[in-house]
Length: 203
Image (tube, rainbow, N blue to C red; front, side, top):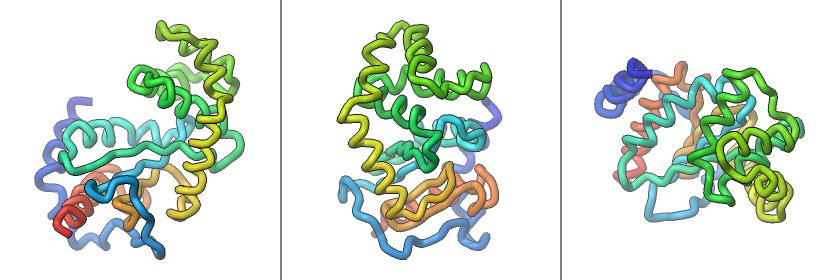
């Protein structure tokens, strides 16, 4: 972890030159999307808790969020691109609605990828929530709430508009799409992200 953070710290300041001429490392959206706050540069990460690539990318994006410029608005989106993802999407948005995402996010990832628990049923998620000292029953009810359903539908629309077909994928200011595959590595993805944020900030 310390090695990754130190690499990212270097990328935050020097990484943009590393990818400046490396086949760009991003794609432009055919139809730019509206962002929630025009006064900020919006960065949206589309992810799925069950995705091993998202789990591998998490330390990189977490370190980047902690050091991101003040003019950047970061958003996580968890659309169930596959129906089998729905419970995980419900869990993410329930944690968001209840204001416990900071307490829930990393343990959920670890339960699946470290402890090898698939967490495919709401009751499995509720047990995890209970183990965190939170109210698992309330959490499970919130997973099935109108608010969560609305957030899931919104995330699916966002993913469709941005042409998201796999995760993790990052959209910058409704204009650019990048991922580990497009950029070539997660280190390059972070560097591309910095480059695009700087580009949009200068507009």
